[in-house]
Image (cartoon, rainbow, N blue to C red):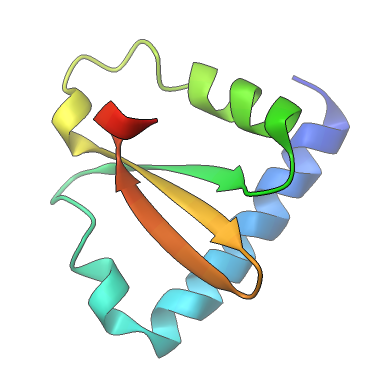
Length: 81
């Protein structure tokens, strides 16, 4: 995993955290004890690496993809990733 990937992931997590503090309904879509996979609507390489990190998690129902699209975020169940 490259330093570029790590920095981008941290930036996306920070942005997602700020977004969810203003849109609490988004938090309700994340399963209890769930995992959130950060993706970017414009970066296929980043998304491939990010999704590969959750490949080993056994309970796929607890995984959601948080995809940045413009200034907002969309959540998707893992099955649709």
